Image (cartoon, rainbow, N blue to C red; front, side, top):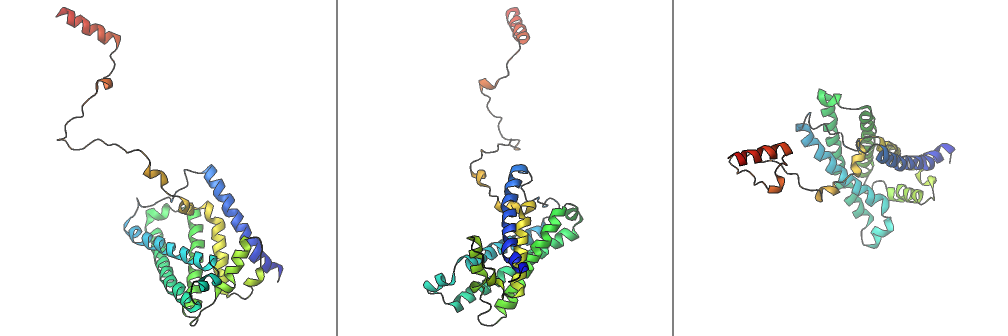
Length: 259
């Protein structure tokens, strides 16, 4: 293999992985207040209510499908009685529906950012870079799924013979770049764009994907005053009475003795 291919399928993925972990650590240490979605819901909510769930739920199924296809060897699915043909059907058709949902959701989010001026002005430079590479990763994966898996014949392209073992061996420091030599260009573009997005991840709003409101379930209640004018006033405890100054006490005693 050429040095270019070795860099592309060995060095580049590892550089992206290192950038991801170091970037996440740096972001957490230096910018915890910026660890957020930078929500623009205050500017527009109608399109957001439609596009955001479509995009995020579609991504959940896309990620689950990627984990199943890349992490689980073919021998494991065969051992539990799942034939290659059945696996292809299970992976392709739900994966295509999930991909369509993600594309439609992303299109709605992008349309909202471009058309709504307030949302557009709230879009930072890192947001624009993020949307560019996120869109490239999603579109390349969708094109690969539809052209090679859905329309590529009854069996499609068997990425579990090439891409999946290449990635697993890469992660255990046993790189085998030759496995990627004959992979269709659609999947190659998807892999490269996916790793590029991974490298950029810590420096964009995508960090919110690794946030979970765990502390919400244990935080104390927030107590508000009632707006009901018919509600009886709260009973004051004697310990909550204001402490009088010495002058107030003297004046009160004088009035008492004068009476």
